[in-house]
Length: 134
Image (cartoon, rainbow, N blue to C red; front, top):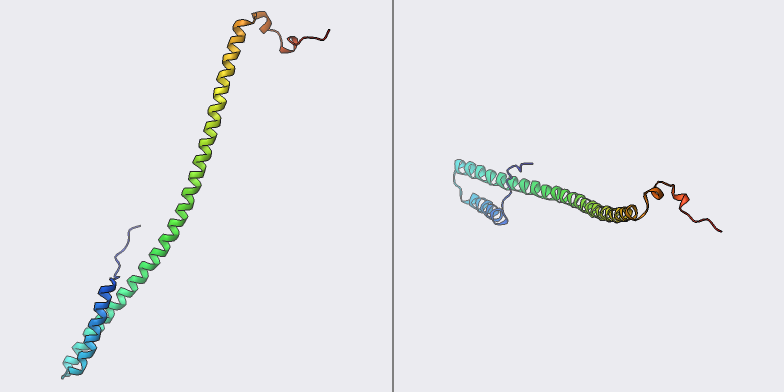
C-alpha cells in the first residue's frame, strides 16, 4: 500500500500557525479600511484552513497508526504460528531421521543374519525356527 501525502504538521508548525492566527486577530483592531479588513479576514480564513487541514492530516495519521498496529499484531500472531509449525516440523524431521537410523541398523543386522545363517534356513517360515518343547 502506497501511503498518500498527509497534511499533518509538527507541533511547532501548528503552534506557529496558531500564533499567526492570534496576531492576525490582534491586527484587526488596527485596520482602517474595509479593503484592509476584507484582506485580513481572507488571510485568517486561509490560516484557519491550514490549521484544519493539518488537524485532519494528524487524525488520518493516527488512524493509519492504529490500523497498522493492528496489522502488525496480526502478522506477529501469524509469525508465531509459523515458527511453532517450523519447530513441530523440525521435531518430526528428527523423528524421521531416528527411524531411518534404526532401519539402517536393522538392515545391517538383517545382512549379518543372511551372511551367517544357512540359506536353506532362511527359506523356511519363521514359525519353524521356534524350538518345540520336549
